[in-house]
Length: 523
Image (cartoon, rainbow, N blue to C red; front, side, top):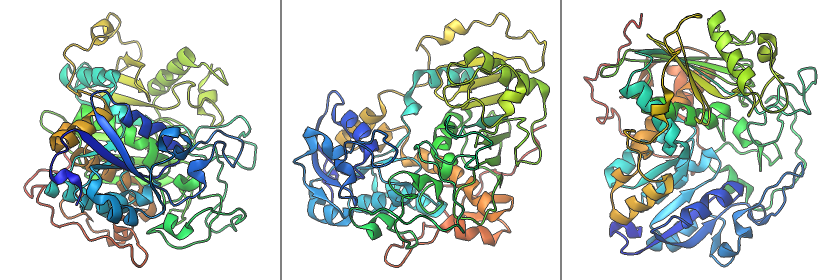
């Protein structure tokens, strides 16, 4: 097994699985963390060309792989992670998993079964069962884990957490709206037949339905079957790799599985959320399609927590937002004050592309995008006020519950500009993981699988509800949608022969049978 059976005395030996452009950003940051002697012992990627690329093969966009860096040129390289773990596992203290989402859990679980600590990118997986399995393994074996949501450590997020949870400046939070762009590009507009774009943050516009004939041109340099891993076999095409994989349910979770992990992280911290009681979802495509919807709305109902009322959380992506005319969600937030708040923020903060002067512009899906008009943000509606925070929470504002209210006219935000009295999220994301490895202490990380597991499951439940096409009443102890057995296929996922993972232990006694999770009237 891994060396962490005995805590490393000095040097921490790491390996990486998935060595493309994200690893080139992530791994050097971990290696440079002050106070730790970090050594790279193995690298693995099924693409034998991509990690060496200096320039993207598509669209002329910058795309450089980890192998281009001098520090990694002489490190042993593998194309099969199982071989790497067999040959090097005894030397590895921690593995960094930066593959597409569908490989996160197979790689992480294989490493943990060898007592190797894991830093895994978000979302943890592509179905609820595999995420719960990994959470259970990490707990049972005392593995040091961390999910890659570095925003968790941002001081401004801690300030919002203090305002909402500690000081309760907006009272009891009973409704939340989260909205997210699709990173619209000026080359497309709503009159263009490629609208709406599905680039999901990767610069590639996926305009195909699952029943369309995909362009199978192009070649994959490496082992395509290994890239597919547990997913249903299919020919390589450029819609999947190196860019478009997030658009397909077999490989990723669309915008919800990407940005949703960051957004729900804020809420899990500030509102002490765990598992939802019910989930329902609507999109602009037939749920049975293989590809993520261009516009997805999800409604979660969370039960009361200690000292906190039940709360409804609404997700909007595809440039939809509260009050947007094109929302597939039937009970759209048709509230003039909610719209005016969004418009005020858009007017105040628009910096690029398009200026916003009216709700019609904000309501237009070709309107403001990332960097403009708070195109990614969340709104917390409490019993005493409304808080709106931009996606990277360097900006947040308070509003009265009703137009014309004066509650926050003289509110002093200055006391939230210092770090004094903030909830403790000490250390960087990387430092926490390395310190946990060095001291053999899983509690050093605050985005370990004990926290990130329920968060990831919540995101994945939204996708399962959409694909099932029904409202799900969730039993987190038994991983069941009560009375909806047709949801099981999406909760458990499908693995091709040779890739199946064990089932998690159920009922899960980490979730007490007597815990109250029945939704109470939030009115």
